[in-house]
Length: 259
Length: 259
Image (cartoon, rainbow over all chains, first blue to last red; front, side, top):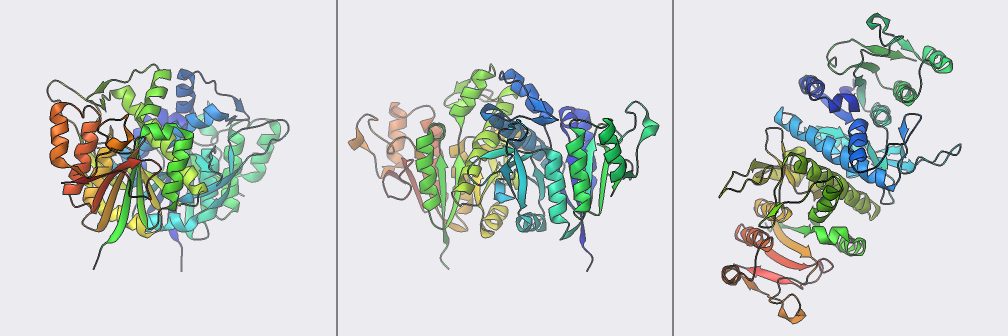
């Protein structure tokens, strides 16, 4: 029996923060037929509200160091503000969406990242286990999961988890049961040789080439974990992984990854 | 066929803010057998974080006037911080909890409260419709809903909704299908003639007596909508409505309402 298609779509913080871009993204998401899951970021909104609260974002290699005050901040912003505004908008657009963190229904359990090379990321979680059963049941009852980049450790704590990691982890975990298509959207056309040259889009984008670009420093900071996770999803069994512009969900534009 | 018992338990902001009280409440909630729903407030936490953001709480008759900045604040605090921390704690305590606002799964749709007697409450919602089917399905799949005091208007907006109103509305809506027991918990023993005299607990607490106390001014501000909604749930078919201390969920202590 062939597997049922499932789209897992990720939207980043820069798109969320721009009402027109967000609306264009949501219109595309709404029009997408079949099973779908939305995974969102929200880092820029968190940084902005954090500044109002007197918290300065402390980033190491594109990841946010998450102390006690910062985990409260991201819990509010990702799990509350960004997630619930999106749910209300999707309900208005006719999608029966349900907002979840990894703690809700125990959908993604993580472990707190250990201190490594002297870097303590604080309340940051690396996903360990996905509750595939629960997510599958939820989609069977015609609701669309909208997942915030937060997980839990099973010991009572919320952990901050990168949205690309969440999307990649879900894609790999759900690939046994579904024909998963992972689409990571952001403000650019895809992975570019030169962000200022629209003709420089890289597709297909091979893993060996990613390793070259990483070694040369052409790809750095936040882009590395994003791409690592995207390739991991593909190796984990996802049918396709594409990185594209926020308003290109329907098309085949963008960078298709290839292992 | 007799209806299955369902406990709907409400926890207020003062208990949430106190870690020991919150833990005592959660221990009681966890130990409660059978179907259960938790409805939480969080007003005090919202006021505190609002002050850090330079927002001053503006209360009229115990209800928060909710302008644009305030609806974002309560969306963050109720839907994010308070709800998700509680979910992580409940998961740790062995309850497979799922955090929801009225927008999630379209469980409670509201209408924005119209301006009345010159008072514009802003983004405040009065519940109109409960998605009984979805809540029932959710409980059937062994997850415990934990509901934040937010609803949506179906037009893309989150609305601030009183937690007692949410609990009362859910109790009335679910009473057709379940033998509903509504328990409103807070920091006192129940409804007291004199808050400083522990022997002055009023139970049973009759609607006629409530009307007397309201007329005399002995009950005022935030206590009025709390009690109005509690009586409404009882009239709406709830099997029992009790107002008690946060650590008395299991006992029969507190004020039982009587119509």
